[in-house]
Amino acid sequence: MSKKLLLSFPSDVARVAGQNASSLETSLKKQASIDGVQIETTIERENPDAMDLGTIVGIIFASSATIAIAKGIADWMRRNNQTHVKVSDENGRDVEIRNADSADIATALEAIYSKP
Image 1 (cartoon, rainbow, N blue to C red):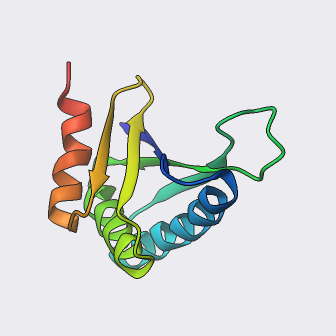
Image 2 (tube, one colour):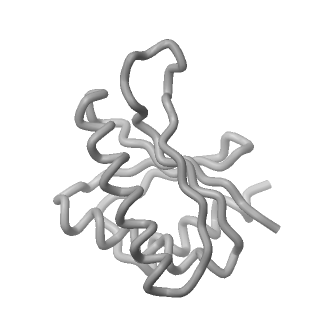
């Protein structure tokens, strides 16, 4: 069963959030390739009427890719000195990740899907 997550940058202005979305998408694809798992990513607009290229990373994945996604997010946060990413699922449940390592991020991703 595939899952979908949306990753956003609530503390960034649109221009910076767009740059972050693009570089995080690249990081996630790289980590998925290293770990040998399949993910689909997209860059989406928070506001469809906005003129930006997109400020949200969408990810579709199977449960087996959770660790790769967590590693990709953690590595990207560390490389970019980014301390805050919001993760939401398709049902509107979300968690905000701050200064976390990949194990904590994996736990947070799983927690989204165990919420009622």
